[in-house]
Amino acid sequence: MATGVPLIDLQDFPSQSQKLIEACEELGCFRIINHQIPITLMSEMKSVVRSLLDLPMEIKRRNTDAIAGSGYVAPSKANPHYEGLGLYDLGSADAVQAFCTQLDASPQQRETILRYSQAIHELAMEIGRKLAQSMGLAGDLFMGWPCQFRINKYNFTPETVGSSGVQIHTDSGFLTILQEDENVGGLEVMEKKSGAFIAVDPSPGTLLVNLGDIATVWSNGRFCNVRHRVQCKEATIRVSIAMFVLGPEAAAVEAPPELADSEHPRLYVPITFEDYRKLRLSTGLRAGEALELLRTPNS
Ligand SMILES: O=C(O)CCC(=O)C(=O)O
Ligand SMILES: [Fe+2]
Image 1 (cartoon, rainbow, N blue to C red):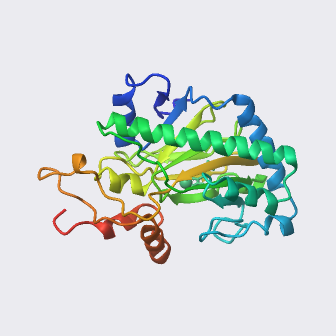
Image 2: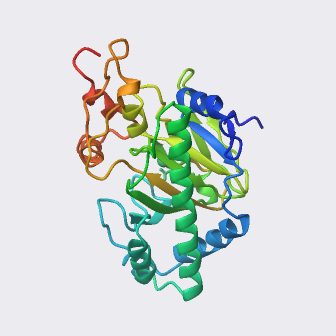
């Protein structure tokens, strides 16, 4: 049952810095332990999320897009067993409140969603600081960056076993923090070197981090934007909670000067997250291939 996903103890820095950077470079995926989000909050949030996803379709449809694809996604031809609810800008208490209002959340549900969103947002900022420090950089890498939140439900049935819940893709932003289903596996991450998929088995109480395309741009090609997919392994409902750290609000993403010099020329032209997202949407390149369109002339 080897998962091959490195474990990072968030309370053991700077000792774990090298391990963190290696995980970002080699797999683009790691599992966090000691993240300080209470396990009770994680399980309360999971049960709130399950009830929101069980709401009638007409209520779920009130969760409209703030940016393309940020709201309710109904089952479709491409992903017939998948549906999700979401919100843009998890760091904004107003956006979180608006999401709760759209879905008629009870006061108790609202309280859990607010506490969870604050805790996961703080954790993302902490990971940003640890990443910057581990790369020898000062400052707060993700401060002020918009984050997207998505709760995913896979309606797996006996007929769907062996088929795909979500097609192979990379995440477009810098990184994703995932609270997986505590019982149902199915997530698979691709090892860059071999092209082989590694099954990510659930590990309750921990959180999984996947790096996306923006991390590759920012790190001047050092960090791996991990390809991943969700396979249906068993005929049961699977629920996961994802928080995407996207990119800076308006500024173009580019490698900091420390990561680009004459020996390591910039591999990608600077681009805003917004323009990169549009590029992915317009080209339909969902598995990181759009990065090739950003290559600098001599790289
Ligand atoms: O449900 C999961 O485990 C992963 C979902 C995912 O890859 C995504 O939302 O981008
Ligand atoms: Fe993903």
